[in-house]
Amino acid sequence: MSRFSKPLIVLALAILPFFLFLGTTDSVRVNGELVSDNRFNLGGLVMAVIGLGMVFGMLRPSAPRDGLRKALAALAGLLCLVQVANSVDIIRIDPLDWIMPDRNLPELQYSGLADNDYIYLTVKTPDTYRRALTREKGDMVGEARIHQAYVDLCHGGRYRVDLTRATQIPDYFDAAEQTAIEERATTMLGATEIECTLSRSNRLMGAGSDQLNRSMDLYDRLEAEYLALAN
Image (cartoon, rainbow, N blue to C red; front, side, top):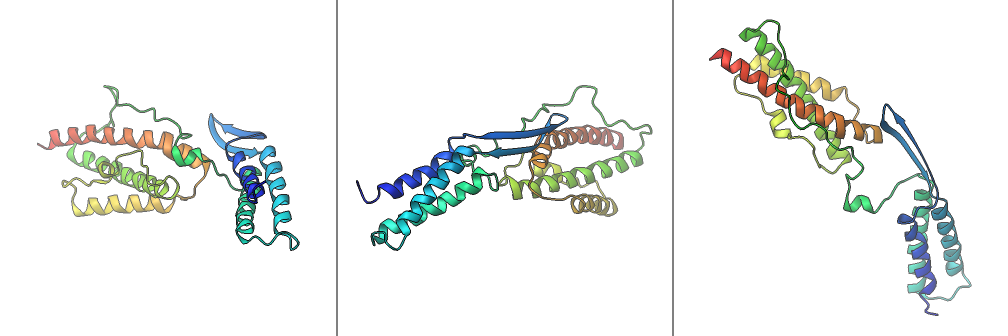
């Protein structure tokens, strides 16, 4: 038997459970949204513990003094420790995440406005339009900044909305309106906790993205009404 056979077996015991799940899962959904997903890979835990036992045997003082073999065994032991943490769900490592990182995100549902979708104003004057546009643009910029901050932190910058379009400030806004937009957006971002969780990802990357995309289309219709009235 090759002197590297045992370290390679330990490496296999540490790596195989990343692709082979032999355990239990426990998920909780609220209003159809997945808010908790716990896993316990019993098979992975058993294999990792067996691997650690083999590593201890190879690293004991009475074992043959083969530096390269011991180094490979130590590396395999570290991977077994990682596998223990992964199997009991202290950490979660899924190699498929490296290939298809967003495969578990909810699909976007929004595809466009209906003909009768508008932001309705009871009084249609230039001033009421400008107030509505200022409010809507402030909300839009705030939501876009929240989306950007969260996706940068938790999803590698893979945005699901057009941030440039959402944050662009039309030149018809005066200085006071631009200040109001900035203050509204800053307040929204400051009041939002940016922390990676499953429920936040499902909301911000799913329904939240749909809502922001819809808001941009609604804003365009409101803006078109205002420009037609102003001209």
